[in-house]
Length: 423
Image (cartoon, rainbow, N blue to C red; front, side, top):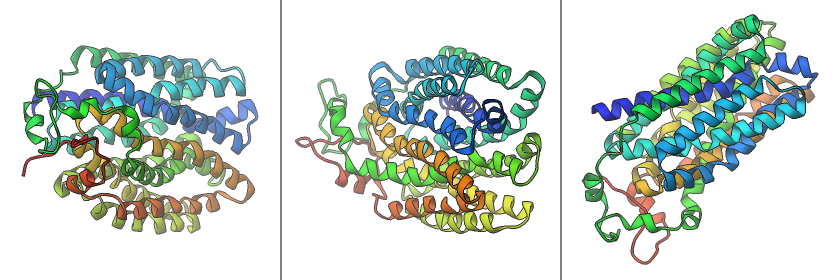
C-alpha cells in the first residue's frame, strides 16, 4: 500500500475501533445496568435494539451526506456527536432516559459507515480496496476483544457511568487525528480509465454516474439483495455479541470480568476472519459465493452445537468456529458493489447494504432476549442458525462479479453508476 492508503487505513481503523468500543460497552455491562434499573432481559435487549433503530434509519441519510459534503467532513461530525452521547449515557437517570440517549447515540453513529467506506473508495484502487477495507473492519472484532476485557474492570473501579464518560474521550482524540491527517482523495485519472464504454461522461470528463438521483440508487433491487445477505450475517454476530456476556454470567456463573476473557476468544477469531475475508475478496475479484456459501454452511451447525454443548469449553469452542466462519463473509458481501459502484455513489450504495445489517441489530437482540426469558438461552442461540441460512441463500442469487452486477442495474438512457477495473 502507498503511504496515503496506509494512513487512511490506520485512521479509519482507529475510528471504527472507538465506534465499536462505545457501542459494545453497553452489552458488556448490561447485567449491571439491568440490576440498577430493574430490567428484565426483554427490556435489556431493547436498550441495545433502540440504538439499531436509529442506526438503521440514519444509514441512507448518512450516505447522502457523505456524497454531498464529503467523507472526511461527515466522519468528523459523526465522531464528535457519538462521543457526546457516549458520555451522556453515563448520566441516564431512568430507563426512559437511557433509551433516548442510546437512540441519539445510534443516530450519530449511523452516519459514519457510509462516510468511512466512501473515504476508502476515494483513496484506493479497485484492486486493493477490499484488502484495505478488511484491515479497517478487523477493528470491529478487536474492539470486541478490548471492550469485554477493559470495560468491566474500569466500571468496577469508577462505576459504569464514569466508564462511559472516559470512553467518550477516545472519540475526541480520534476526531482530532482524522481531521488533521486523513489524506485527500487520490486523483481520478485511473478511475476514469476504468469506466466502461456504456458509461457516459459529463462535461470535463467526470463520470456521468455522479448525476444519478439518489432515489434511483435506492431503487436498485440488487443492492437490497446484498442488504438482506448482510442481515443474515449480522443476525448471528449481533445476537452473540449482545447476549454472550449475560449468558456466561447468568447461566455459567462467571463474573463479567471472567466472561470478558472468554468473549475475547471468538472476538480474536472474528478479527482474523475479517482480515482473511478481505484478502479472499480481492483474490476472487468478488465472487462472494465462493466464500459465503461454504463458510455459512459451517457457521449454522456450529451455532446449534454451541447451544447443545453441556460444557463451557465446548460451547465457547463451537461459538468461536461459528464467529470465525461468519466473519470470513463480511468483506465478500461488500466486494462486488464496492468494486462496481462509481465513487460518487458509494455513500448511498453502501448505506443500502449496511442498512440490512442494522435492521438485524435492531430486531435480533430483543427477540433473543424474549426467547431466553420464555425458553432458554440455548434455544435463543439455536434460532440464530437461521441467519447463516439466509446469507448463504442470498449469496446464490446475487451477482458474482462486476459484469453481472452491471447487467442487473437499471439504466438511465445509456449510462449506469459503475466503476470497472481494466482487464
